Image (cartoon, rainbow, N blue to C red; front, side):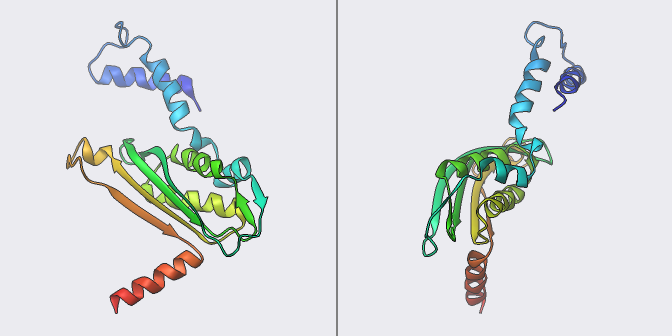
Length: 186
């Protein structure tokens, strides 16, 4: 990450906002913001394959007849349209292990790191699923996310109660979802 460039741009932003970047309260702001961005957008430095390798510690386990479900993983992200915060995010993940069980803490680590990218909520779900598929070899993965978006709650519509829910399903979960949707339409 180019932190020096971020510092320069934050200084320019403060000037564009008609403020004095040299005043006492703002003097260190460009450096602090650059450090903040380096941490908040750390996920930009990794591909999904790299995350699968980094957090893909699996254990051999005969668990084909089980569904593993991990719920209420809290993360945050920033939307790519306004650089606005996505907050109160809860991620729930289900998968069928097929002989390779992912360590439970890895679900939180994968979700957190994927969230540290500029993107849409829909992309977060599909990326988390892809990392889990790459790590475990299972194609049976489902990721549910619910979140509030500052681009809706703090500006524009200013609807503080609006929650966005997304669902990514693959493999057996997608087949089951598709058959249920088809049945409910008929």
